[in-house]
Structure formats: structure tokens, C-alpha cells
Amino acid sequence: MSTFHITVRVALLLFPLFFVEPFLAQEVRHHACFEQPNGAKEAIRRLPESARYWLAEDAIYIITPDERCAFLHLNADEEREQFIEQFWYRRSVDPISLGYDFKTEFYRRVVFANEKYGSELLAGRKTDRGRLYVIFGPPDSVDEKSDPAAPHSIEKWRYHYVKGIGENVEIHFEYVTRYHDYVLSDADRYLVAQADQNLAFPVTPENVGLHTGPKRPPKIRFKDLEALVGSRIVRNEVKFSPQIEYSAATHATTLARIDIQIPCESCTRDGQIAIEHPLFVRVSKPSGWVVTTSELVANVAMQDKSDSKLILTGHLDVPIAPGSYQLSIATKNATTGDAGVLRTQINVPTYESLGTKN
Image (cartoon, rainbow, N blue to C red; front, side, top):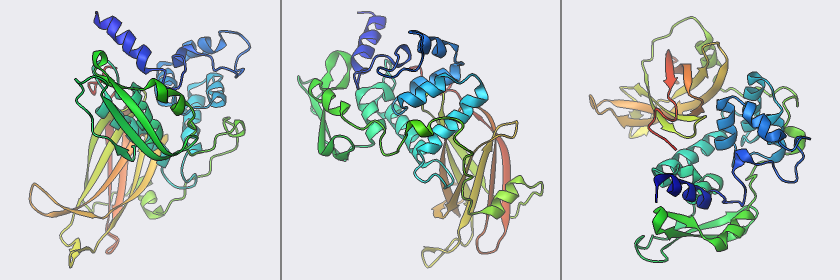
């Protein structure tokens, strides 16, 4: 059988986890979005590539029919960018806190699914196990696999609770030899379809529009560090360096994993962390548009492999579209008040350049 036919049959088997047609080709059932029969298809065709990818790969699991309809009626890139920002803002665990907890966790799951369940034929997030991992999160327990070469090999996932299904949920995946993958069993497809696809956040028709009022600014704890980031005064009293690794999530979004390392000579006292360094991180476009801001604290002491000295570390995951950005970081020694600022350009790679094809 040719690779083309194998790919098609795999996609047909694995895609309809929730009994839906291929997303870009479908008009949401029982939802009047366009008066014309092919209105949605035409609107999708007119979307720029990045927006089309975002709709088909990033938002596909969690976007509501009302949100999808509102997105398809937008005509400008700036409006679409605002919509996507508010899309994640509505799902934020704490809407007035800095950072998008749900957004970051979502993309962490996507990256894990890609790395754990992907193959040459299908991205991990598109497989049955990958989809469930992204939507439900990691299972509470997984039965050890049987020999995949044996007939009727089954992998069992157990969740203590799944919203919309209930408690003590058990989901079975059957190994299909010709696809070299575990596929959701027919008996469990109906069960999974009962799950609340809105997960744990409320999205109603009343709060999906672009013009529901200005977004409340995030609550900033480290205002002095925020001021340092925007200041022209360069403070180099605290030396530090970020190390960034990029992981492929979707064609529209890359997960930037930032580790910030701050050398310290007397971080600990009696085996306990004696000094902390609060951090303020800002990622902005060359135009100055702020994409995201985050606050964290470097308070984990580690041994520097290069010279055996101690370093304090802080870790931050940032989901971001491929492209060029300015990364600005400000920190200070919470004990002495010494501060440091670093500004550097980062180039976020594309999905394909990270070696991912599907």
C-alpha cells in the first residue's frame, strides 16, 4: 500500500475522536454562522495562513461554535490578534493575574503529546492518545502495555474525574498493528464524546466578542522591575543569562522554554535558600507591541557544571508565534537591592524548521 493511502487511512481512523468531520471543511452543525451554505468555507479560504493554522490546530479542541463564528467574521489581522489574545484571557485561571496559566498548560500538553505519541505519519496531538492528553491532561494511571505485536493489545487510562463523564473513568486504546499506534476503542468513543469540551472554564455567547470592554491590566507585583525594563538606564549590577529551547507545538505556535541563570556566591545558608531574585520578563514585537509579560522568582539553587559555583535558576514557558521579538528581563537581589537588566532579540523558529513535518 502506498504511503499516501496509509496516511489517508490513518487520518480517517484517528481524526474523528468526537465524531466530527475534518475541521476546516465543516460548518458547525446546529449553529447558524453564515446565511450562505458555503459561507464558513469561503471565510476560511480568505484567512491568512497563520490564522487558518491557529483555527485548525490550536483552537480546534476548545473553541466554541460562537467563538469560531465570531473569528470567521473578522476582517483585519489586528482584530484577529486581539481575538486570540482575548480567547486565552477568557480561559485564564485568574484573569487579573500576570500570565496565562491555562494557555501555557495547554501548549505544554500539546508539546508533550507531539513528543510522546507522534510518528512519521501523524503529529502526536492528532492521535487519539494525544488528543485525550491535550484535552483531559495526564491520566492518573496507565496500565503497562502488553506486547504491541500480540493480538488485542490494550492500553488503559484511568482518570479520577472527567467533567461531563463523572468519576473513576477508564478509557481503552487498542493497538492497531498496521498503523503502529493505539487507537481509541469503538466502545469508548461514545463515552469520550460525553466529556465537557469546555473543560473548566466558562465561555458564553455574551463574552466571545471583541468589543466586550477593555481587558483589565494584569496585577503586577514587581513594579520596580517593570519600570527597569522600560527604562533607558542600564543596570548591570546583577549578571545573568537566559537559555532558550524551542519545542514544536503547532504551525501557529512554538513553545519557548526559557531558563534564567543567576550566579551567586552566597545563595544558601545552612542548606536553605538565603537569597531570592524576583524576575520580570517581557516579550515584545519589533514594533513595540507587548506580546506577553510574566513574573517569577529565581529561587532554586543548582551547581554550575562549568565552574562548580552555585547559580539560582528560574524557568518560564512562553507559547508564541514564530518570528522575531525582543526579550527583556529585569531582576534584582531581594536582599541587597542590586539590579540587572538584559535585552536581546530572539528568533522563534517555525514548526517546519524544528524538524516537524505533520
